[in-house]
Image (cartoon, rainbow, N blue to C red; front, top):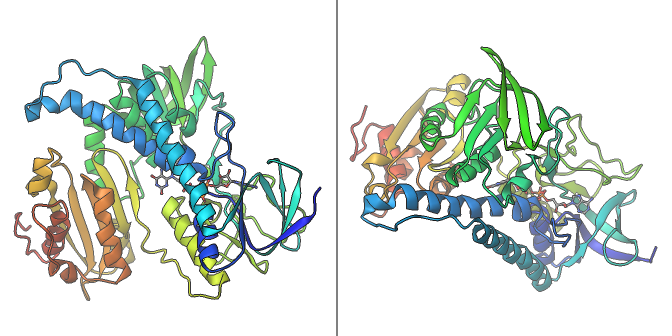
Amino acid sequence: MSGSEAFDVVVIGAGPAGYPAAIRAAQNKLKVACVDEWKNTDGTAAFGGTCLNAGCIPSKALLESSELYWRAREEFAHHGIGVGQVKLDLATMQRRRAGIVKTMTGGIAALFKSAGVTGIHGHGRLLPGNRVEVSGGMGATRVLEARHVVIASGSSPIRLPSMPHDGKLIIDSWNALELDAVPRRLGVIGAGVIGLELGSVWRRLGSEVTVLEALPQLLPMADQAIAREAQRHFKKLGLDIRLGAKVQSASVTGGAVSVVYTDASGEHRLELDKLVVAVGRRPFTEGLLAEGTGVKVDGRGFVEVDEHCRTGVPNVWAVGDVVRGPMLAHKGKEEGIMVADLIAGRYGEVNYRAIPSVIYTAPEIAWVGLTEEQVKASGRPYKVGSFPFAANGRARALEAAQGMAKMVSAADDDEILGVHIIGPFAGELIAEAVLALEYSASSEDLQRTMHAHPTLSEALHEAALAVDKRAIDSINR
Ligand SMILES: Cc1cc2nc3c(=O)[nH]c(=O)nc-3n(C[C@H](O)[C@H](O)[C@H](O)COP(=O)(O)OP(=O)(O)OC[C@H]3O[C@@H](n4cnc5c(N)ncnc54)[C@H](O)[C@@H]3O)c2cc1C
C-alpha cells in the first residue's frame, strides 16, 4: 500500500449524483477527489455511472432512433413523403448509441480536469475516521484522507432467483440496450418506466413485445387519467401489456426462455427469445463500508440520511440512488450540489415536492407534484383543468396531437398542486410546471403568462385557464 493523500472532499461514485457533487465542491474552492469503479462491457473505465453508461443516455439514444424508424414506416406517407422500403441497420444504430455515451462520459473527465477535480478509477471503501481506501484501479492500493466523504454509489438492477440472469437470454436493462439483433419475441417483466421504455424501443424495431406486470394497474404512481391515456397508446403501438400477471419462474431451454406466470384466470406459459427483467433497482453498497464506519444502512439497503443527506456520522454524506427518494438522475444531481454547498458553509436545499418524473415513450409522459388521486385523498378541495393536444396547432403540425396537459390546483388559494402531461415533448414542457411549483405559483399566474404561438407550451397555458373554466381553445366542461 502506498502512502496517504489528503483532500477536503472525497466522493465515492461519479454518476449523476457524485460528479456534480465533486464539481460543485471544486467550484467552492475545495480540494476534491472522485473515485469511481465503473467498467463498460469492453473493460474500459468511464465516469458517468449508470445514467450515462447504461441508463438515461443510451436509452434515450435508442428511443430516438427507434421512433424515427417507426415514424418513417408508419407516418411519412401521411406527410406526403415516399421513402420506399425503410430498412433497419441496427449495427449503425448501436454505434450511434455507443458514440453518444462515449462523448458524454468523456465530457465528465474533461469537466473534472477543468474544475480541478482529481478523478480516480478504482473501488472506494470507506474506512473509519473518514478515510477512503482505493483499490483495483491503476497502481497500488492507496488511502485518501478526507475532511468530508460523499457516498454516491448508486444502484443496480434487482435480480430474482426465480429468473436467473445469464446476460444472453435472461437479461437486464443494460444488456437490453446493447442487443445486436432484434429478438422476434421479447418479454419484459415489469411495466415500470424502464420496462416501458425498453419495450417501446424493441417493439418499434420489430419485436413482438409482451410486458408482464404483477400490479393490477398500469403506472400507479401517475395521475390515473394520464395512465389510462398511456395504456391506449401502448396498445396502439402493439405492446401487449398483461396486468396482474405474477411471474413464477423463467428458465432457458433449447435457446429460448420459458416463463410461467399466474393471473386471475390461472397459470400461463410464454415462450420467448429474450426476457428483460426490469423489476426495479436496489441501492448498491457492496464492499463500500468497512467495519466500524458507523454509517447505517436500512432494511432495504439504503444508506440512512436526513433531509440534508447527512448520514449521522460527522462529515459523511450520501446522495442519489443509494439513499431514499425516487431513483432519478436529476434528484441525485440536486442532492450532490446541495451537499457540496453545505460542506462549504453555503446554503443548500432540495425541494423534494418538486421532482419531475418523465417517461420517454411516445407520447411522452411527465408530471410534477401531486396526482388528482393524491389531492382527493388528502381531503383538500381542488380544481382541475385539462387541455387536449388535439386542439393545439403545433401538435397538429407535428402530427403528434395525442394526449393532454392537466393541472390540479387548490380550490382555496389556487396554488398549483400538480401538473400531468402526456403528449409530444412532455418531458420538456414539464420544466415550466416545475418552476411554477418552485415559486408556489397559482394557476392564475400561468393564465396571465404569455406563451408563444404556435407552441406546445400553449397546452399548459390552456390547462391553467381550464382550471377556472376559461380555456379559449377548447370547450370548458
Ligand atoms: C435503463 C435506464 C434508464 C434510465 N433513464 C433515466 C432517465 O431517463 N432519467 C432519470 O432521471 N433517470 C433514469 N434512470 C435512473 C438513473 O440512471 C439513476 O437514477 C442515476 O444514474 C442515479 O445516479 P447515482 O449517481 O446515484 O448512481 P449511479 O448512476 O448508479 O452511479 C454510481 C456510480 O458509483 C460507482 N460505484 C459504486 N460503488 C462504488 C465504490 N465502492 N467505489 C467506486 N465507485 C463505486 C458505480 O460504478 C457508478 O459508476 C435510468 C436507469 C436505467 C437503468
